[in-house]
Structure formats: C-alpha cells, structure tokens
Length: 210
Image (cartoon, rainbow, N blue to C red; front, side, top):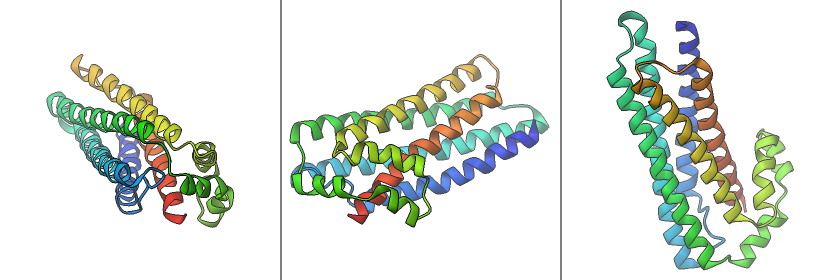
C-alpha cells in the first residue's frame, strides 16, 4: 500500500508542475482574443482567476495525499485529510462557476472573426509533432478550436472540471464515512487533474502561437 501511495504522490508532483505551467500560459498568453476587446479583458480576468483556483485545488490535493502517505505510521488523520479534500473540491467548484460565467459572457459577445479564422487555419497536428505534444490531447483541442468553436472548448473544459469535482466529492464522502477511497479512485482523481490541465495547456499554447 505504501509503495502505491508513493507512486501517487510522485504523479501528483508532476501534475503540480503542469498546473503551474497551465496557470502561467493562461494568464500570460492572451487566450481570449476571439472576443471583442472589452469582453476579452473581462473573460481574461475570469480565466486567470479560474486557473488560480485550479492551481490551489491541486496543492490541496497534494497535501491530502501527503496525509495518506504518513498514515502508514500512525493511521490516517481523517480530519486533516477531509479538510484538504474539502478545500480542493471548493476550489474546483469555484473554477467551474467562473467558467460557466465565461461561457455566458462569451456567448453574448460573439467572436472576433479574424482571430477565429486563424484558429481554423492552424496546423494542430504539425504543432503537436514539432513540440512533442500528445496527439490525442491536441486532437481533442483541435476538434473545437479547429472549427472555430471556442465556446465549445470552454464547455468541454467545464465538463472536465465537473468530473473532477465529482471525484473529489466521492473521496470526501468516503472520508466522512471514516474510510479512505480505493487506489483506483485516487488514480482517477490524478488522471482527471492531468487531463483537465493538459486540455487547457494545449489550447493556450495554440493561442500564443497564432
């Protein structure tokens, strides 16, 4: 059990590095210019805030797994673990609320056509190959951005956040019942963090490139 938990923590450490990069590219690389200027600024602020919430959620999830790791000596501190998971879930929930607001604002504003055209003309496969990126994940991004469907991309990201929140709430429910979730559930949690961050990361790289 301890070895499996150590592997979980190592994976989450890598996830933590990824989410820092996600936050940086979403904040610094202007991922919201398909919208008119005033809307662009508003959505940019919300994207920045949502990325920060996701970053802080990952930090709390890391500390939760630290509680699991040290449980080998003295048993799991359920109270401390529950506090970490509860905060991680609250952060993801806030990130999700922000993206719902982003979708509403963007839907009302409409797109800036020239930038949408550049997204549709972008070579996603070649970009993935040139930068050593996952073709599968880039394909998922291209399915939205390559069709000029930025709002569809945002909706997909929101669904990813919702799935992550559901898993965190499952872990939370297990802790409230006085037990630790199975390793399979913890692995699922890590994979969902990773998928959610990579999806946003790749899109931000595309926006930066164009």
